[in-house]
Length: 258
Image 1 (tube, rainbow, N blue to C red):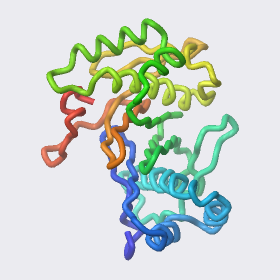
Image 2: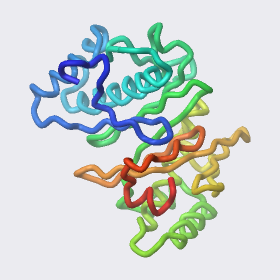
Image 3: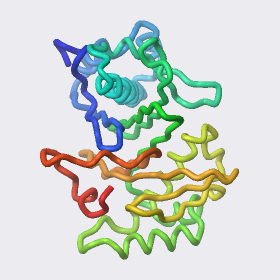
């Protein structure tokens, strides 16, 4: 990335078309180097206006988003694309979107939490992605974000796991994260009313989320293990691309086929 940023990125492409960006630097000077490789002039100005504590998450989100878009462009034969050639804005519905001539017509969603960020780019239509650390307060999610039927669904999903599975807290978090991803794809957000979004099980280890207006979103799940936490990733869209023999699934992916 340092010497050939037009063909390399920090982001890690994942099955399903989304991209993961982790904080791989340990000092401000390294973060400054990464920032200058990835951001255009206007984005650098925005970065400088961010509070120092907020800069890392904001930068990681842009890295994940730009690399998700660039991976999509590279797959279609676009050739070298510098990170600064893709900028990130919002559409009239508040959804994240890529900007610039190369990214015309593409759809984008991003999320960041702690020292990780995820982004999903797609051509077919609006998409949504969310990431959340596995909750350390399951009771709060049960009371605020999930219906009794969804809590029973989490119990059922946990019961299907093999020995040494992820546990009930993981599944409660997954249902919550699925709602966030679907609400982003819808362009509305949860609007402070997560109970209005209904999650049910779907074939192939996926979830189905129904919005308040009756639209359905198919949501896929994956896991990210960061040094500080175990995170759930949920995203909308087509099924993940099958892994090759050289891919190494996480233990959660191997268990749930997601």
